[in-house]
Length: 241
Image (cartoon, rainbow, N blue to C red; front, side, top):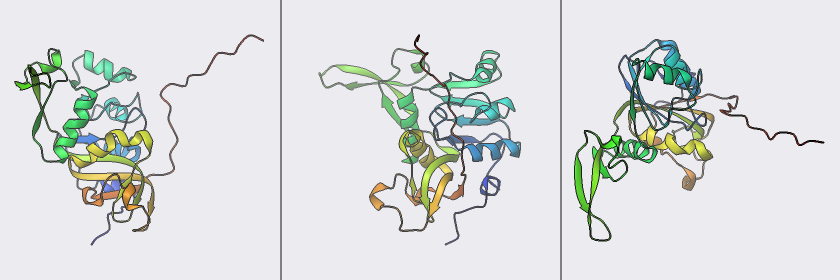
């Protein structure tokens, strides 16, 4: 079996990038974002990209870097705050945005990874989220018939993921908040590329602690060291002496 380990992000993405791709990207705020891989996407010059991601980072961090270079055509996101360039492009009609409730977005990715083309949910019923979507009634626990809307599974061309540790075969562990969107984002892509802080020999990781099995992982890089970015640095005001 050929190695899944590549020397750097540019090498790991070689032959995978093209214009107008749908990319599923992990991360939650600035936590667990595939920084090195996103830099390589930016440097490649591909454009017309659609990103399925919880958010677009902040100005000049995460996907925000690709917004600055006008490489992103559409965002499928649940949270779009903290990014002035995102706001400017959306309000000026330069960026298409598909708002999606956070849990629904995670489930759309998970469904795509499981080969499920669609599912029904109550989330968004009676709101703008439901506009243009199929509505079907199902019996509720109290016996009444209630409306549910059809949401489509996400099947991405490429998944970009940030993890904590991996072994040489691609079995992956995430750390704390970084686990939130990275797992479903990883599974819904036709090809999955993971950047990790550390790669260890096969058999090192506890099999019961694997969050993403190596069968989902096609390529890996070591992206460390990282500088921890903070969205809001909040400190308590000094009390009067």
